[in-house]
Length: 481
Picture 1 (cartoon, rainbow, N blue to C red):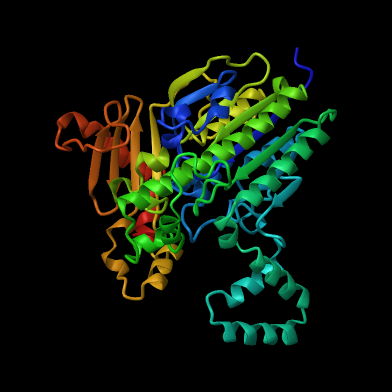
Picture 2: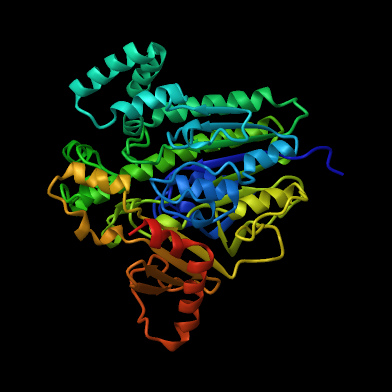
């Protein structure tokens, strides 16, 4: 008989794609610690996220729903819907102490990511309140002189100098600066995690700790000795790639050469290796403290990254598996599920139902979420991408290149994809175009199949039906390209 409910440690390796992990077959040894952990855990080989970037994928993680169902689908709709039975809130109802440690500016109070957590620690945003947020919004995108004038007017009219002070400090710790060097965030997060775990060693109240490490997100800037583990040092290339980011590529201000793309990927591999070492240390602490057997440990990613594959960089406009195939490693507590590898089709939103199943909860999971230890298995995975007409990303492209015509941007099309349990993948675009791939032979979609095969008609019809039933078609029709 179990004495208590298991503790839950959920770690998200932000922007870490399975394709670049040695645990998933990559040529370079990027994940020695995850491989060590996998010897005592279950590795899910066919796990996919629901969306290509942070906000919708995390909302799926916390709600068990697809983006079109939970509503956090685009960069104009980023806040969590707190009317849903979100995972932290559900765990509080089950008697858990809940804490969030986030290195991602989107996973903050501003977007309701404090909902259900007893403690929320965002390491990027120092003052996560509406006063500082209102000041930031008031001056965002304006020239420096206009910002100063607006701040003076606000100070005299509202007499809230504290808000201005907080906003200025937030600017000093701005997200772009954090992304230029995520190492301090990762080290601070590690310190807070170990402190949390140590403080809870003798606590009889079960705990849920959610962690987001943004280390692998661009710009790629791993520390020594990981930095040049997979590439020979070349400062000339580093200077060139440091000037630009992925939106500059789409704005046609920069096209990375093959050498630059390869070098960026090598730095990215160094990021994964560094983060792998940090997670390995956290795992070792759980082992030494005797906490591992009573802990449900989940390690996953929210989405991946492109390095020139199929004409894409970063994670803004693709629905291919470089972005959607993610790692998932689960160390179950007690005697639950001792398998080492699992090839079942699964998605990030299945973590929701799995946690409820481990807890033997009487609360139902949504139909979109299937427990990884349950008897029912997925017939399909559903991948979604939305590009709102008033997209902040497209506005960013225009700012980078005033001559850029967003009406000619083919990559702005919204898209939805179906992956069957036999690993057939069908992609549908909002303009009616479609692609089909056999992932058994071509997992990373390099060879498109002919779409006029009558055997595929039932899958086209299924995808059309799911587009309607999930709400994807309605949202695209009303708000998106």
